[in-house]
Image (cartoon, rainbow over all chains, first blue to last red; front, top):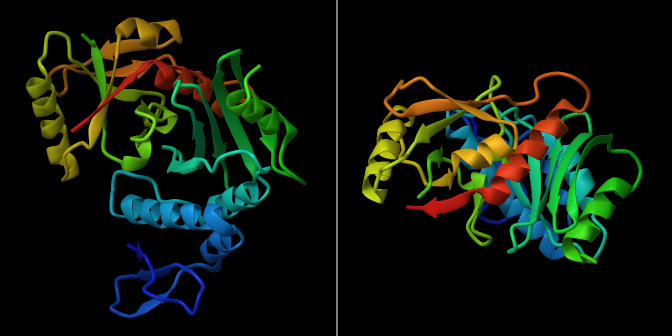
Length: 157
Length: 121
């Protein structure tokens, strides 16, 4: 079992470290490190700490599926492309091990996107003006279908 | 009074800030979602049920999502009671084949999230 913890210092950079079965601390899989280093500013720190806490919590819970680092990398890709004006989502893990990104408003409207290891995105939205769901592949740019539902969530007509 | 409860053991299964159960908490595993019948139970009794569930996990629940049976039925789900342990059952009737399967399951989970009430310990 790998237990991730927040780094003490890292020469101005945040990274993931783990303690495994051995007492020696070593770096985690490069995919996970890459998954968080690309996110900048407040979004970066928010996502990094959420991911660290999430990893620690999930890896300590034998009832939960292990998380595929590739899914985190794809989630990073999606977060990096998030257009300005949209809040950072809350991050979680689905029962099938996919990464869940949830944008939630206080009026109980929400958009939920699940990110799979191969860039497959499944989304569902409960909005003031109706509902939406679908599956898309993460390619270039931020998916227009997600821009549409997030715009409807944060800027309802 | 709520009729069903989904116990929450992971902090990423609810949003404290927005007081909502997140969709991941409701998504099925092997086609079903474990819930409990809490009809006629007081808060302390529901907590006790949750604590019993937590014994097997080695930790108590961090909270629960409460909802009416009609909430589940309105999104196409049914409660199949098995009483193992007492009052336990599963939400069944999730989309289980066809295209966009995960998205259709998420649509159900999102709708249930919007209706459920988050109760934290």
